[in-house]
Image (cartoon, rainbow, N blue to C red; front, side):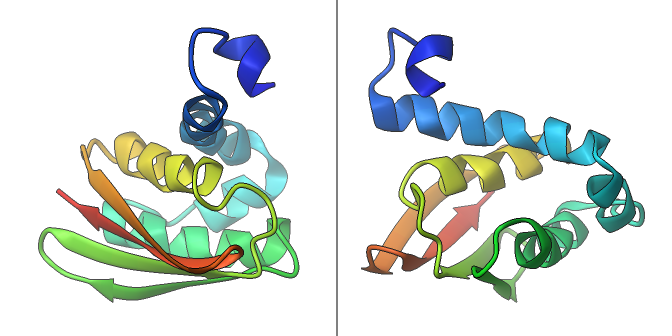
Length: 120
């Protein structure tokens, strides 16, 4: 799908761009409407995102480890598909949906586990 939608981009870049678009699709689903129903800001959206991972990406584990005035640390474990690209884009898309432009930095602890730092 990444190559079909973004033929000019590298595979990883296309996967990241697909991840950015996933929030809108999830928000239209029944589960998405329930999980996101009380979200009004980026901290709330990231917290809801951690819950959404438990429902929609088993056996992954997501945790909002830290949230501050202009920084968040989002930890992911047991993510077996494109943690280094698609899932970074997922968090960037969530921030964008809240009207926040973020910079992201990934720190992998293994191929399937890591932390994504968002700053704004």
